[in-house]
Structures are given as structure tokens and as C-alpha cells.
Image 1 (tube, protein in one colour):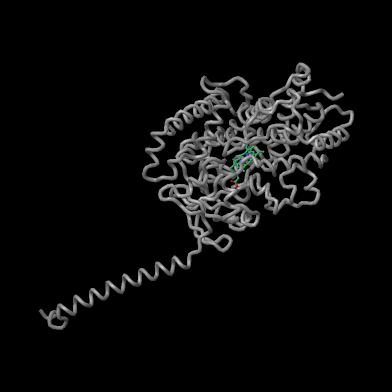
Image 2 (image 1 turned 90 degrees about the vertical axis):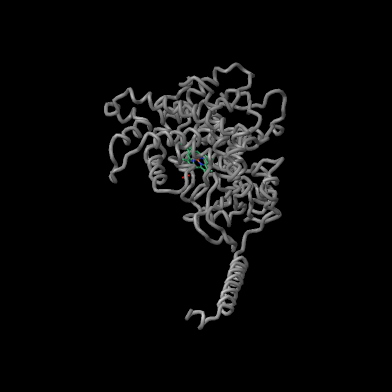
Length: 504
Ligand code: HEM
């Protein structure tokens, strides 16, 4: 009653309405001013629900995005369904993401495929940034690729010798499928060093190695459902993608189980250091605590094996195939390379891994291959972890990042008018910074970025030293088919078949 006397009801109501209206105006203004303060990168016009997805139709993703970057610039916002992506297409912007602000962009987007195939993000390559991932990367570096890489190279020498012997005995004038040859070679090296067995014979009943890895790469590339939060699950269910993922996981898991079981029958303490492979080391690590009281779980081991299987073999094989294709297509390059290698080796009759350190042209040839045929054309997607600015534009957490390594490697504004030409000599004068990024960069760079080029150089040196190579069926060298196929890893669409003629 007293209150009513001091504040009559009409005054109370008017004050309340006025207060609410002021609040509304204030919220609207602050929202507008924060919108005005936000500067998003240029973006093609979006359609409801699908965003810019339609812009990817009819062309491989890396080519469609490269084409769009000509119109919208080196940093472009692109929506796939509801998910925003930053598309990076220049060395300056790539350096921002992979070096200057690497600490913000070193995560990976979540997806159903990667979650399942990495045992719930226990791996290195596809998991978001975490302490666990960092530890796993350290293990791969210290026990497989870093100081112990000598084992990889010893095995490489053995496998290359076997391959050369087989090629010498190959019937004259009959073409060899180099895709099959390189796959057997690289798989042999990686499996022997990682698993102690080159698994030439499939260890499980089920799909072949090629099918297994192909399917896994397809699933790791993501599904349409990933980009549509509410209906995504149904899209994946109805399109059969979810079933395909489960089958792929079951097959891959059975393969990895077999690899681990093969080791369980051995008493690891009794295996000599020379005979110990990567899985032995991982199993040892799972049987005792590390300095922080942690130990590897079976899922950790399986996820690491999955990374080696999917990351280590295909990328190296496609690089070898592209390198041999370009060398064969460019007779001038082939002759210059053969002269360098044959002069270097002389009458020694054997290429050693140490010889290739002196083969400067060979190194330029492999670099040129990686420039023009970046094996992972858009790298593996990165993700922004906190709000920041790139090139003067605002970027928000949760934005995916695709770096167009394929396009950057062919950009005439960087590489000159002969950007499309295979011309290894360009590296005589060109110091590479972020102009080409075939191995990515920063915290998520490929841990094999030093070992993988040596592998490719050694195999190419041996093939070019021992043989002269001819294109079969009267096809001219320069007319070799160079069509591309694939999205996460870019393959040569038509297998490379060449005739080896032994050089005396
Ligand atoms: C020519 C051969 C290879 C190429 C071109 C290549 C390329 C790449 C690329 C582009 C990335 C992603 C980088 C990024 O997102 O910034 C990557 C990551 C990775 N690669 Fe390779 N790779 C090769 C060989 C290998 C080998 C032999 C292994 C292991 C045995 C390997 C294991 C990995 C792993 C584990 C990652 C994930 C790194 C992380 O996210 O921290 N790669 N590789």
C-alpha cells in the first residue's frame, strides 16, 4: 500500500516499459556495432542450408577452390553446409596459419570418419590438438622416423635391390606397372620396419591392402553429414556412408589386431635391439609407466599403426609415380638426371643412400615434383582454436582451414610464366619459404618431411641409374597421360606403365 502511494501503478508500468525498450535498443546497437567491427573474409554468395557446397560440383575440390580464389582473393570464407572454412591460397597467408599463428590453427576439425578410424581421436594426424596427441607424435618421431630412421633406410636398400633384380629379369619390351611396383616397395619398407613383416601375403581374409587403405582415406576425407548437424546422421545413414564406415573400420581393425597378435606370441625382452620393430617398442611402452605415470593403451597403439598405414605409404607412392611420370615426359630432364647419377656412381654398380646427398639435380627434380603435384592437395584440414585476425580479417574458433598447396605450387604470380612447366632448374635460384607446402608446416607438419624426400630420391636414383625408360605402344613421351584422381591424396588417374631397358 505504501509502495503504491509513493510509486503510482501507471508510473511503475511506464518506467518498466521504458526500461525494457532502452534495454532492447541497447542490445540492438551493441549487436550492430559488434557486427560492424567484425570484418569477415570475402566469400562467394551462400545458398540456404548448403552454403557454398554447390560451388564444388563438377570439379575436384582443390581446383574449384583455386579457381574461386582468383575471384575472392588469397583468403576466402567458404561454407560447407553450416561449417565455415577459411580457404588459403597464397604463401603470405599460409605462413600466417602455419607459422606466425600456428598455435591458434594447429587443431583439426571433428568428423565421424576420423573419430571412428582413430579410435576416438587417439592418433596424431586427425585428432584435435591435445597433450595426448603431442605425446603420440613424440613417440612416432623418436621410435620410427627420427634417430631410428637408419632402419627405414636399411630396409629401403634391401627392397630396392630386390626390385632392381626383378626388373633386370623382366621380359624385354614388356611394360611394368610402376604404381604396383612402388606400392609393393614402399609397403614392404614401412611394414617391415613398423611391424617386422612386409606382409606381402595379406594377413587377414578380406579386402586387399589397396582397397583397405583407399576406403580408409575416403572415410578420413569426411562425409556430407559432418556439415549438417541436425540431418547429417540421416543423410549418412540413407546414403550408406555409415555402413561403409563401419565395414571399413572392422576390416582395418582386424588387420591391425593381426599385426599386434603376431607380436604377442613373442617375449619382447628376448628380442634383440636389431630385431625390434615399432610395434615391439609400442607394446613395451604399454607394459610400463612412463616418467609421468602414464602408459600406452591398446587403442593408442592401434591409432598409431593406423596413422602409419594411412599416412606413410600412399603419399610416398604417389610422389614416386608423379616423379617418374614427369621425368619420362621430359626427356631433357631424364638425360640430365641420368648423367648426374651415372657420373656420380661411376663403375660402383650400386647406389647408396649416402650418394644422393651429392646429387643436387636429383634433389631439384624431387622438389619440382612436390611443387607441381602436392600429394595432399589441401593438406589435412586445420581448425582455428580462438578468435584472431588473418590478413586483417576476423576468424572465429571452430573455423576450418584448407590450405591449397596444389594451387600455390602452380601459381604463376609466384613461380613465373613457366609455373606449369616441369623445370627443376628453377630451384638453383629459388629459396623456398612458404611458396610450396607439400608437407604442411608448424605443429601439424608432416613428421616425415625429412625422411620421405630421401626415400623418393633414393628410389628414383636407383631406377634411373639402372634403366632407360620408354613409354610403350608408340605413345610419345610428352603425351603421357597426367590426369589426377582423388581428394585427400592426389593420384595419377591412369597407372604409369613403362618399359625398362637395362643400361650397360
Ligand atoms: C612424400 C611423402 C609424404 C607427404 C607428401 C606427406 C604429406 C603430409 C601432409 C601434407 C600432412 C599434413 C600437414 C598439415 O596438415 O599441415 C602430413 C601429416 C602427417 N604425415 Fe605425412 N607425408 C608423407 C609421408 C609420411 C610418412 C612416411 C609418414 C609416417 C610413416 C607420415 C606421417 C604423417 C603424420 C603422422 C601426419 C600428421 C601430423 C600431425 O598432424 O601432427 N607422412 N603429411
